Image (cartoon, rainbow, N blue to C red; front, side, top):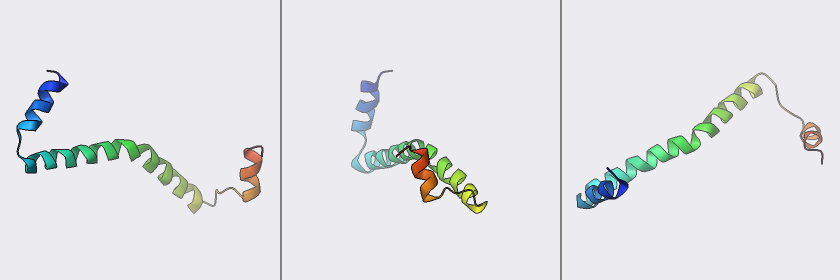
Length: 65
């Protein structure tokens, strides 16, 4: 079944049910979109807890600026 068929089904729903579907789709997209960022933040937190942070000079040196 193609996308057009699926959209036609959604259009047949009442406004409240369409809102629910849009809400859950938005949640799914956000989870996928931010999953990589969440993992990065978690790994950085572990580094900070162990004192593994870069100084200001180290950051600029790594950037060759």
